[in-house]
Image (cartoon, rainbow, N blue to C red; front, side, top):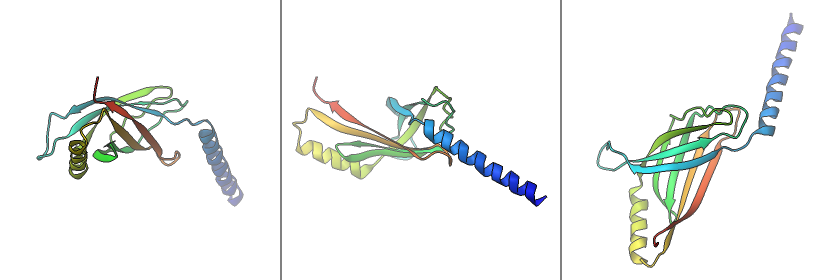
Length: 155
């Protein structure tokens, strides 16, 4: 009986290791796109909240069941929005999922940005950055997404 239990335990470990090896060898990082950015209609308290439309594209052969996500938006190096959510849909294999997250403004980061903009109003563009950390469960590593670019202020 002990032999059977040992053999079953060994088979379980081997199957787990082969599944991890197969998963890590063919895994590609998903693409995250911002599809919309609007002021949220329902406010809680004094601070405004923003709805940010997110699209995740899964280039992998298996679905990605996300558990949660943290995110932040920076302009000119100042964090102006941040948030977290456990409500992320499972992204099907070779598919995409669209959903909306809410972000709250960082009062001090926003005030510093405004002070910087008022002291230097000769800018033709602003640097922005979006960062997110997606939790896809224990079998996959945390997925870090960073997007950056410029927002043109003049036509």
